[in-house]
Amino acid sequence: MKTDILMQFAQALAGGAIRVIDLSQALDSDTAIIQLPPEFGRTWPFRLEEISRYDARGPAWYWNNFSCGEHTGTHFDAPVHWVSGKDHAGNATDSIPVEKFIAPACVIDVSREAAEDADFLLTPRRVEAWEAEHGRIDAGSWLLMRTDWSRRRGPQFANMKEDGSHVPGPHPDLVPFLARERDVIGFGSEGVGTDAGQAFRFDPPFPCHSIMHGSNKFGLASLTNLDRLPPKGAILLTTPLKIVNGSGSPCRVLALVG
Ligand code: 23J
Ligand code: MN
Image (cartoon, rainbow, N blue to C red; front, side, top):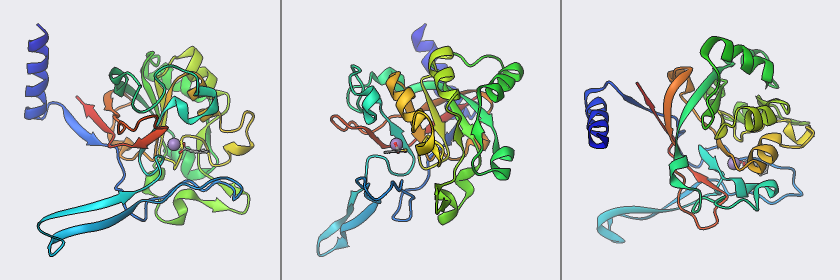
């Protein structure tokens, strides 16, 4: 029986009945990294250094060294990333039960609102309106916020002003609603992080980090191609690197769409 399901799955993939959508941004030295106020430590940008390319350094092989922060580009946030999540069992990239890296996704399209207002915040009311149309968010699902923010290039992406970054994100009231009333597996966004650009001013600060990770839930940041997903029914593959005690990792996020 189990074999039949997997055989059907393989055939659906091979025949194109299930498509694979890449929700990841390309990683290079231009990849945006989070900028915190100067009193805090800094994350490294992505850097690639050639070791050899079929030359004197290695006549038959091409390879590189790379370096970057754990939270670079399209990436996975583990609960241990935040102080509120530090004591959960299985809270780091190497210790999260691997079953959790495969989960369904709900996608809420707020691209119109985000185009009009860079500080747009997704509220529980807006999510309940989505549920009235598409059905309740199932426990264990991701909630992905589609803003089309990933289409922005250069400085437009971080949208940094004198008073900080202006990027849409979840309203502080939405995060406890998703964590406690819907029991999502995590929240995903197209921004450089899961929280809104102005979330350092919220109460609590960075609610999508403090409350989600405090509830042993995950984050996905710098997603793209969310416009290619149905509102409901896609399955996400979100495997971070198995960094021992890692707080997160760049991630090749894939979606299976029927
Ligand atoms: C560290 C501090 C604040 C934030 C972040 C990291 C992220 O957004 C992240 O990538 O986890 S807001
Ligand atoms: Mn992160």
